[in-house]
Length: 151
Picture 1 (cartoon, helix red, strand yellow):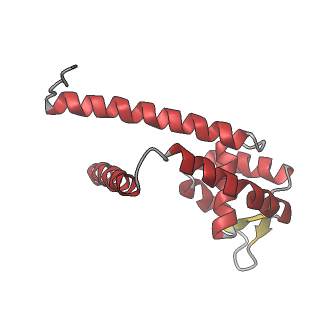
Picture 2 (cartoon, rainbow, N blue to C red):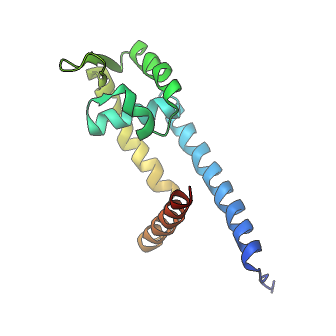
């Protein structure tokens, strides 16, 4: 029987980093593959999903909500607008603000696609019990908050 290695804290941290990075890459690759079946890239999907679930959003705020650099958001909005999945709407109270709004075509697409996407995500994590998923959520939040507080 193979004996489990005993690691010091630094070695454990490095091993955790590698395992977490590989798992993240595998998950991201599978999710991207799923999203591309609908002729969208992950960023386009993220913007559509935001608008589908949260309603109209100021274009200036979308980047922060979907973890996208502000310079890239105009490009993504342009692409989605050309696909007739979203539209720009000027704010009547402040001409400096423009909202992104999901179109009927975009809504129809997300009504078809999102349930399938949810199923795929559920399948990706099906090897974990509910309490294990919750534990991972809590641990990853703890790491994220520690990092945010140090910066």
